[in-house]
Image 1 (spheres, rainbow, N blue to C red):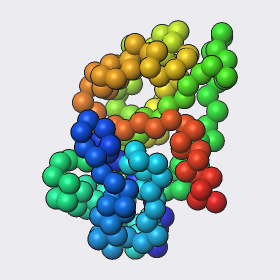
Image 2: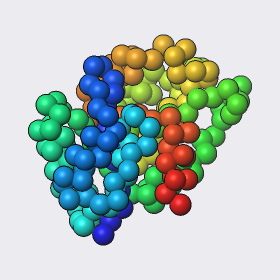
Image 3: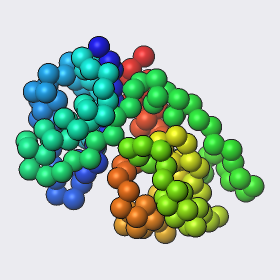
Length: 180
């Protein structure tokens, strides 16, 4: 048995509303165990009988699309991988303060493609800074997300069609703390 956390893109945004009880049922229908959701933004933890995360991701995506009627990109991480992500302490740039910096994590399917690294590096500014990890990008914003010029469709343009989903680091920390 393997433990996973699924981060779903597009749940309860843009007119796609899914109650968490229904989302849990959809995951249980796949034969997954110990299914729980955390806040209504598409965070699902569960146990699976397979260690094949790529095959599992594809099965979940196909099942979600058949049950919901639209594509739902899924990003899987193990609890250990998520703990490593939240343990990352980004170095502060001159003039930055941890108390005024918003920290978001952008999840990717695989390693950061060079095109995405170039695109995000090109939009680095005093307000927005990107740090690259294995399959994640840490987005540091001086101030609130809504104050960034990349807020909304700006980050989608910057990521150039690469499959992503994003979570606030505080949400991720709460998910990790629930798993222990």
